[in-house]
Length: 188
Ligand SMILES: [Zn+2]
Ligand SMILES: [Zn+2]
Image (cartoon, rainbow, N blue to C red; front, top):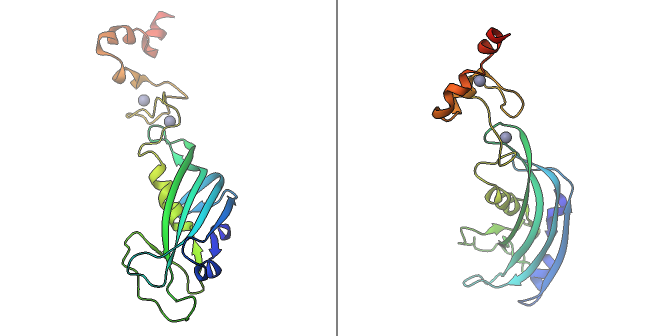
């Protein structure tokens, strides 16, 4: 995931408001525990800022990214690729003053990230968090997924089983009884 890392040493030496635009295109890979099924792509703007009570400055990353994440259908457990598109902003603080080389007081921003000691900004963790936030709590392979049979575990999208009656409207149960394998055998 090197393509999500940028050295911002030069940017940190520039005046507040200086910025860089970077195009992001990372081949399908994993991010945290999540497998990506499509390239992670988009753009990020890196903006030199000076947050309050922080003399060493910081870099605000404003990103817009798309990808597709691998997930499991919450009903039938089939593997699905879910398109994800999100915008994010994340603030990165230096640990070392880029001009003096001295250690900087740790930042107090709970949502902020650290730059590496050599002023590398790594978007990986911010990207991972936003992909997880963008995914549905209960992914589905399709809105009409019939799920697994609670009794025998068969995938109802692929095959029928004798437990189908359990989900049939009780008013239709007498009709369903006519269609069980036993009745069909008797009819032959
Ligand atoms: Zn499904
Ligand atoms: Zn069943």
